[in-house]
Length: 186
Image (tube, rainbow, N blue to C red; front, side, top):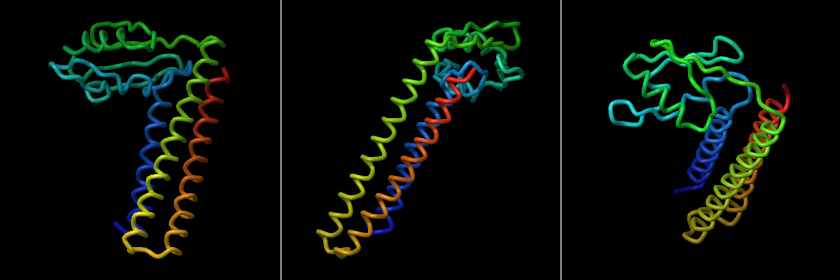
């Protein structure tokens, strides 16, 4: 491990943490139909739990409706069961070939709850990013201890890691602000 690989690993891990945040935000119901609401839903498909997006086409033809068309029509019942078991609180309507999900508008109370949850998820991501910074700094200290880098290189490594941390925390703040705005405006 060297200076550059510590930085690269820290950046990759921070990018993954930001990706997880994006996935969680996409799956959050906002009152508008979004395929992200159900695409990671696990469906029992021939004995294995499979993400819905792998076994069906999911589209939003209208702002308040999702349409799910399974690639294999025999999986329609399993998809319907998975949606009913999930915590999205929407009952699918089936015509034998496709499922339609009517997305009801959110109450002000529910919007506030979701905004609070979005803030908590954002804070969890910030903590994860700070933990990555701590790990990178420890790796830098270890490299210094092993005489692989000098004191000056350690100092500049810590500065670079701090810049990365700040950049990714700003991205988290931006994503949180966008999601909060999306949740609180009707």
